[in-house]
Image (cartoon, rainbow over all chains, first blue to last red; front, side):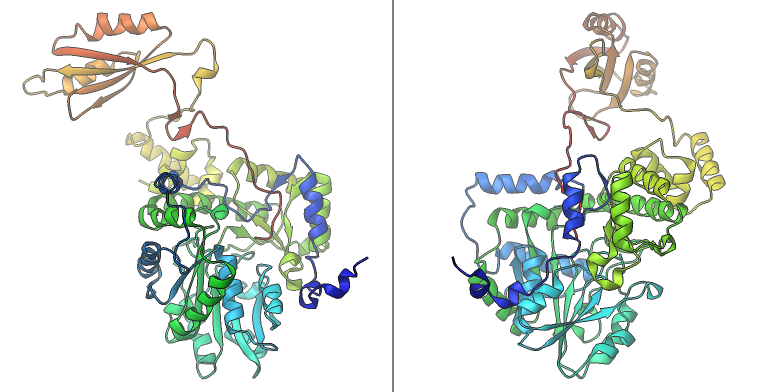
Length: 386
Length: 161
């Protein structure tokens, strides 16, 4: 019998499956779970966008597009980034349309990381960065973000992790799972720290539309001189409620973007054509749809923060994404124990903070991509559990 | 006037004072005062549920009646519109641009009641020159609420993304 151990790629086999897989599996088998566990919008994709996809199919738009993506879409992306975030990218040489933000992150990492290069990753954060750096032959260096700093990456924390081998820093803001955002001043401090180095910033801005309390998203590429070293990643999943369409994009100076485009060209060819046509409408005609979703998220966010604090779980007010990240330290349980017991006893599913890195211990993530009634029931049951 | 409260109540009139206070950052007393003020000013007119009457066997029959009106000197369409609006059978009255002048939503228990109301009350009214009655056969969406779509959550229970 074939010895599979001997034929598989070590780099892949050595990547550990997520430690909370078991918890996810149990939750998935229970049928009466009240979940606050999903990081994907509960809204359907606005009808205008879906209709644009249908019209494109009716019009027979079913072939490959250019590797970089439809030029009309890239032009729309350039306009959108300019009017929303004061970013300026050349649609012909600096923008690439990808299969979701995920492909963009992977290609961005691979385009700059050589074997043995260190990539600094602030945690708690989304789970893909560490494995992607490992698969690219890099060494993930974790920077632990602190609740007392609002889970931002501070220049001081970053400085501690920088070595001569540091190649890149991942900037996952607004943050899944903490809801932290970075502001211009935060990036200015980072700018002065790294301005004489060759360190690249990989900025995952997939939640950029979702900021609250009058705060606008700031892209590091719009701050000072950081544009030349920043790879901006964004997409349609969260802002336009288009998770299943698998569409994102990456913007970077031409020299970097050309390499990312090579990776994309050989591994993907082009992003889904139907999704690309739909996305043109999303960027061009859907500001009011997005505003309505944000208003709804904002209401839920406020009620959820209040709700967790009221039942005795300290919860700071996040200013971005669609998650709250309350502390469960007062219960004396670990995040894993808390979530397992809450699921078993009250059938409420939250995600342990440790799913997003060890320093997520003591916290749980709750998503407010759910109706208000659903959120209220989950909070009530969690209150009873405590 | 507090636009935030209005927007929240327009979406869900059942929101409690406490919830409104959390969402607006006002105290509960301030929320109550705002609501009272806005009700007095006539900004908030009523708080009603959206009901899918078609789910009941003995629901309602509705018709959209387009009226052509000869405007009264000095009053325009105002006078007729207000008069029409007084009937309890009339759910809504709108002044239109285009071919018709007034559009009236009429709601009765039966088809016959609608016919009787249109012919005996509206059609004979001085200055109404013609009526066009269109019966509502099915409602798909009302006051922002889709009535024909039962949404199901296709998402998983937990995910890290």
